[in-house]
Amino acid sequence: MMFNTENAIIISDGAKKRALELMEKAGFSPEQYFLRVGVTSGGCSGLSYLLDFDNVEKTGDQVFQSNGMKIVTDMKSLLYLLNTELLFSEGLNGKGFYFNNPNASRSCACGESFSV
Image (cartoon, rainbow, N blue to C red; front, side, top):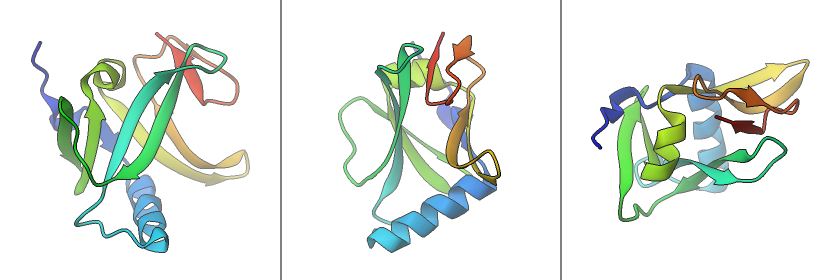
């Protein structure tokens, strides 16, 4: 199955800014490292999000750009993450990255897991 991965995962300005700050703090160059996003089994709703920095593409990875940032995910995760937006909040209800996933039919109260 072929997907147009041009906008498979959209990163907001705030999430990009925070990701670049964290990369710099860790000593990672944005020219060599990218954002790896994925989904794994677990959490109270059945599936959990993964978010990390990486510099090695794996066989079968789907690679695309959003807001000038390289984002990589595996094909299985992409099926759950199509048109998902990665956001960052500094609000009173919690600070951190979160996913606005239109494919999720429900998510847990903490927002770290979901189901489809």
